[in-house]
Image (cartoon, rainbow, N blue to C red; front, side, top):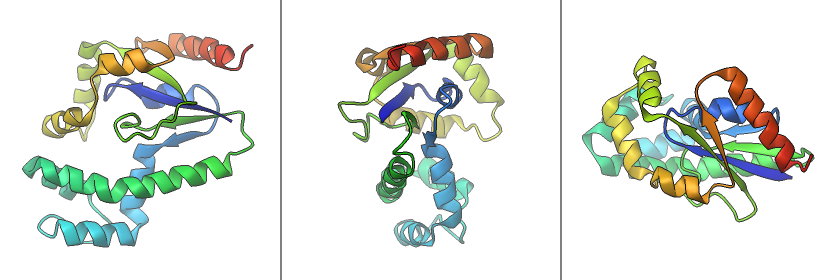
Length: 191
């Protein structure tokens, strides 16, 4: 099984690029949303650590956002509780897809949380900062304060780009992205 890790800036189009491979995608953001909705243990641990912010189950993203905006250390607390669950879900994803030729990992802090292994193929999604900002501002849940707190957790983009095996330019035109990913997939598969 070839494991492809997608790297890039917040809002650079990593999820879109991940889907273009046509293989199973482990999307950490989707997993986190499921955990917030369904995992009572996670809720209880977060409520215990952040009682001032967490009110009732299922977890509400706006409560977590407030906790993060109020104090950067709250973000670290949330990560400590949520990430081991995400990692366990990822291992289940690997087991479930063990017969697939390729799996794609769309995990925002793949390198930062040392999830990537030596044999992972890293693909960096390169997009213009101006275009990313324009897209982020259109999102309904975009909060600049949260964005900058999350940015602080990330390794420098240039470092990620250097460490990547491949770079996909994202000009936010789907036809060119599809073409680029197809070429890339054939290279990875040795076609």
